[in-house]
Image 1 (tube, rainbow, N blue to C red):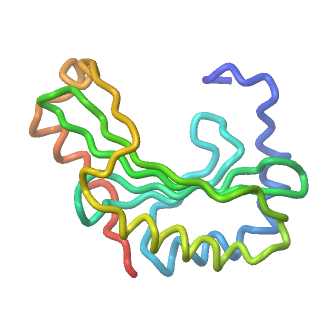
Image 2 (cartoon, helix red, strand yellow):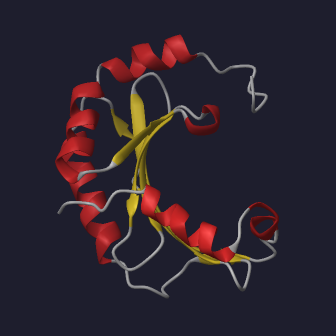
Length: 151
């Protein structure tokens, strides 16, 4: 229980996502995205990539209830020197698990890739822990760990 979520049940989430797995895994493969399951014990599967304009993009399919999921999109850009993370995000209203999730994921990716650098929704300053963990060069190399998305 690393994040202290007493309700985290990976077997229950695996059962839930098994109905969506083929669609979600196909989306990740088709677009060269890194698939991340249950990050920080969240009831979600995430798709991460290096945004063409800099920073990291993420699309997340999150379980809302036994019958619904929502799709969340994020883009963050980290400025090491200013110790600031800039963020843009969007979400789709919860939808039934048996709905056209594949089409919604395609739309979310297309929209996220169309966002313009600098059109941020919020930013967080004081990210000085970065400097305790990495040099600027090491920090910049972290971005290379994310794949480049295929349209």
